[in-house]
Image (tube, rainbow, N blue to C red; front, side, top):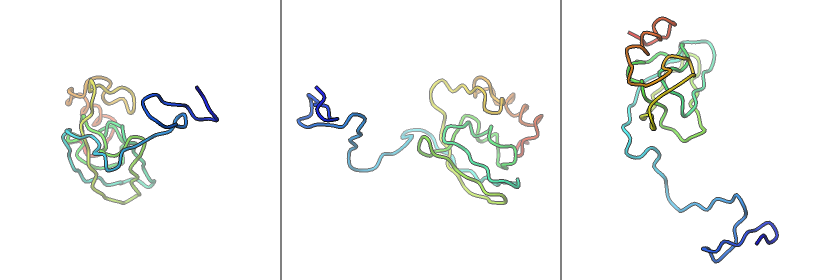
Length: 135
């Protein structure tokens, strides 16, 4: 039964507003139980670069300099929907966490297009396309 924009909830002796969130007190640890890695990243380009929370980190902008092999199968350890911004000439540390699910990546920069376990192919493609941080 809808009453004035509120809906009676049978397991709750009150009313809630449709779409309302009720969150418990305290902090939530994101990506609990997943391995974490910290790396240093430098923006060698002349423009700011923003990287979203769920991007396969090895595939980010070519002008970001870091050990790309270390980042295969990982993404930023930040809340979903947020991003990290790297200003030109800036160097900063970021924490990465493992990708979940079936650990397959498609699109983005077309370096992976399949399983993240195919590391040599990913690095070969990065080298061929001029990515920085590929030995």
